[in-house]
Every structure is written in C-alpha cells, then in structure tokens.
Image (tube, rainbow, N blue to C red; front, side, top):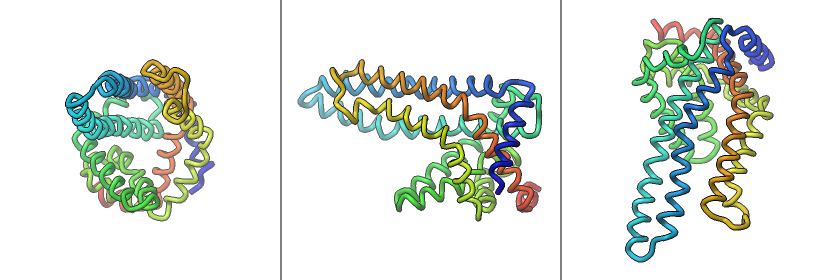
Length: 260
C-alpha cells in the first residue's frame, strides 16, 4: 500500500469537488452531535439531579434505573452514530468517482438503511467479543472490518454478511498498512484525544467547585473543539481510506465475483 499516494489522491478529490466537502462534513457533524450532545448532557444532569439527591430506597431505585439506562442507551446511541458514520464512508467513496456530489449524495445511502443497521450490529458485536479476549484481537478486528461500509456502498446488492466477509479478505495482509495510514494522521487523532481529555478533566482532577455546571462547561468546550478538529481533517482521512479501498479492489478480484 502506497500511503502517500492515497493521501495525495484524497487531496486532489477534495480540491476538485464541485461542492465543498467541508460543507457536507459540517452538516454531517452537526447531525451527529445533535444526537450525542443531548444524550451526554442528559447523562450529566441525570447523574447530579437524581443520584446525588437521593437517599434510602429512593437511592436504590434511582441506581437501578440509572444502571439500566447506562447499559442500554450507549448501545443505541453507538448504533445510531455508527450507521450515520457509515453513510459518510459512502459519501467519501462517491467523492472519488464523481465531482458533482453534495449533501444529497450523503443521504442517498439511506436506501440501504436496513443493511447498514445489520452490518453495524455485526461489526459492533464481533469487535466487542474480540475486545473481551484482549486488546490485540480487538485491534485486529477493528481493521479487519475497515472496508465493510465501503464494500456495501460499492456493491449494494451484497448482503451485510457478504460485505463483512469480503472486508476480511480485502484487509488480509493490509491491516498493518491501514494502521500506518492512521498513524500518518496523528495530527488529527491527537487533538481529538486532547478534546476527550478536556471533557473528562473534572473526573481526573480535583476541579475547584466541582458540580454539574463544571462538567457541562468542560464537556461543551471539548465538544466544540472536537467538531472543529473533525471538520478540518475528517474529509481527508476518510477520502484516503476510500482510496486505499479502491486500490485493494484492483488487486483482489473477489469483489467482482461476489457482486455478480
């Protein structure tokens, strides 16, 4: 895999697009965080307003409700945001093939919503199961399924399971290269990690006057910085991944045989 050529190809596609990919990315991020922000703010407020002010049987009841919420809600939110992220993968792939694409092309992927949901469920479950064994198997599983969304959008007649299996084949012998490509975007992932650190700062250190307002303040600052970071670098990263996928398809003929 020639990582520098993928990155260069992505830059050219971004510059040559008739509609600004950054505008499409901004809409994508606003919709994404329209789900994440209310959920996270509700979690913060619920924790302080309900748990910290309960006692006796009320506390036990509140803890049970909270534990149920904390177990189910993250799974639903993760599923929803992962499906939305899959649509952005499809947009990045079309960016390599067409110049005149925009927000409508991002939403066109909703025609495959059933397959997208099932594919996302499989990816989340398999990755989680491998992570339960150890970090390294989970890390390998993450890159094993890296092309799954791109394959589904490239060959919409495939089932979610076929796309997943084909991703395993296309990433065989390429997982380390995909990891190296991610490392080449370290200037993107490090600021994102810093934003997450800002969000969790009240939990790691003793912030003066800790409380709900403090947690919300740090969360909003970290989230705004995270949105800005993704707006600047996400289009290039995803377009580079799409370029790597297209190059893998040229080498591996299994895509053509499965898509027939």
